[in-house]
Image (cartoon, rainbow, N blue to C red; front, side, top):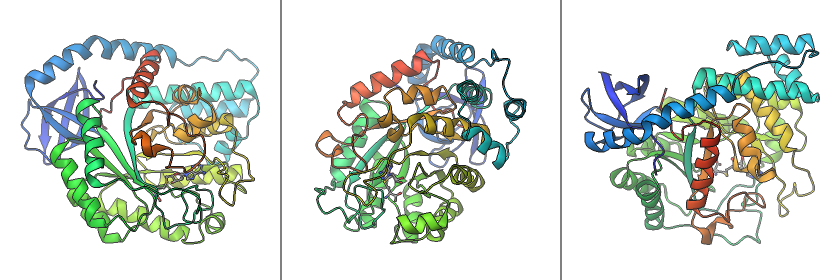
Length: 431
Ligand code: SAH
């Protein structure tokens, strides 16, 4: 099982290397290894995560060779852009035309697209987003694994089922050895090259324990580590970076400060954003975004969130639907439709042709076809759930989460089958 293609080091300038993949060159940062030109490496998220033996690399490349070009061909075929709808609104077409050249679209234009209710326009919007993804990013699709290691949380986010206000939920917290076991399996048995360590804001999990965990993971398993543990003391994040974590998944949840205050009585948008700035200063890769369809959120606010995330310099976008949880103050509200969220993700692709766009599990929970639809509408990243099955249901941020009852083997098989059918390589070649 392999989620990355080995690349051959072509040149080295300081800590920046150029890697060749069957004639395609990408850049990656090398923080961890002693490398020479001609070495083989795996890169993930723009970083070298593993140096590999030449013979092993050549064997793997041999199995990839035909498939690499086959997948590309399928993708190019499926993302071709043609307009078979002669009567589309001129103003709509003007926006679409500009976007296909990678030109940025304005707030007003993005809003025009998001508010469209015309099925022909929406179809063209999705196809354009897919075309832009193919043109600027190619057919690589990140496949990361997420481990939800604790549902203990001191915060009171009004939408979230693991909020400390939910006193009916049984709480759990995995020990570091248990997490190490899951990661070792994910990396060595299943071939994951990127993992997310996620939890509530769990004060019982000491920062030193998480830092120790990161160090052990780096020593035992070559993998790109994302942290998603929320607001901890600032010094923790520098130490975690020094220990080997290189990315954070940390949503700003909404860029509307009034709405933010209403939903997060324990914090403020200003504080949340200060963390994101801190992460950037330290050098982390940033994955961020917001909830789509929050009660009281207008379409303008969704576009504000997209523009905000782009200005922030996100490497990966994580925008997903709000899904009401019965044991929260927002239980009486509705989730947005999957169609609305899919439309929003396509608009996001037109706003930023280059960022990675994640298909969230929340979106997949609204509609089992949504993963495919989102990948065909501008998205290019997915996440599989590695949380041990005895605990995964307790990570109850919203009800009826997709894939919680599917074994990791089956999640992998489903993902690979889907990616193959739409010509995507389950890999991350870097930048
Ligand atoms: N403690 C971490 C991780 C939080 S849980 C942090 O603060 O970043 C991960 C994400 O789940 C949150 O960022 C939130 O956007 C999402 N989430 C929580 N409740 C949700 C709900 N009801 N519907 C959809 N997504 C939800």
